[in-house]
Image 1 (spheres, rainbow, N blue to C red):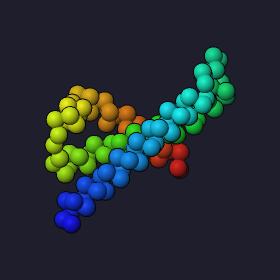
Image 2 (cartoon, helix red, strand yellow):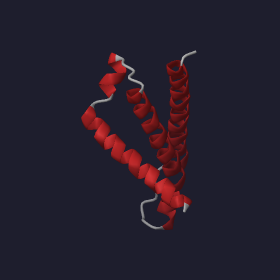
Image 3 (cartoon, helix red, strand yellow):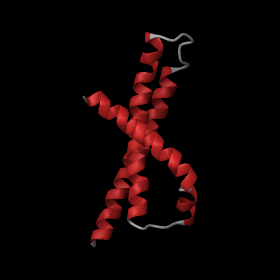
Image 4 (cartoon, rainbow, N blue to C red):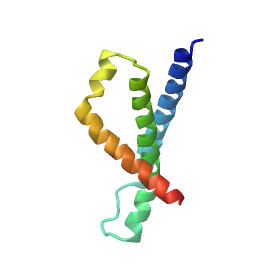
Length: 106
């Protein structure tokens, strides 16, 4: 296998992990039910688990998108999803997600 092949396999693993984190995020939102109608501790607790999954999903997905571009991969269907204007918003969301998880580690 070439270095490029190894990198593509690694990228695929990240994609699989990102997809699993997306599933966990969606499952956690469904399991939580509707959010409390009043702000306060109950609402913060309601967001805790879904935000955990969302943060790691976005951060991992950002790695996949970044890896796709750095490896120079191309596919009409994938590249259509990687619209530069949409990616700017996505990169900001991923940055916020990473910043919050890094801040929580301190």
